[in-house]
Length: 114
Image 1 (cartoon, rainbow, N blue to C red):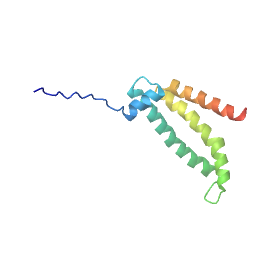
Image 2: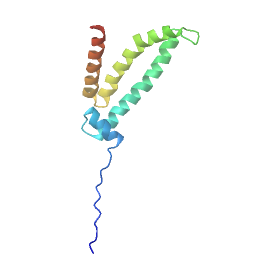
Image 3: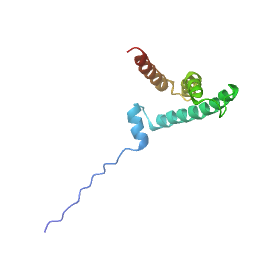
Image 4: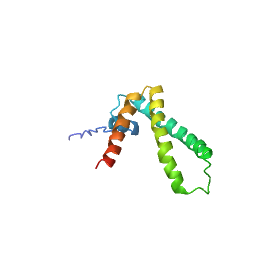
């Protein structure tokens, strides 16, 4: 009587951070964490800037939404891009964010040059 030997292969699914590392073509999980921290800091800072900017402009709940949207696009979105580069530089990830900025600029340019 032969004994059957169960052969198991451990094909672990990559973690969320490993998937991001692969997608973003980063060298280490630590670099992925730094990039996520940059996104977090930038998002939090933009929320504070938007509140201050909208207050300075005198916007309140009675201000038309389209006015707020236009102001957001014209002033807050560029601030987000600058902050991404600033925080990216502070945390040693400037090259990653610079490449993302250039890619986004090309996409926006294509929208207006068709």
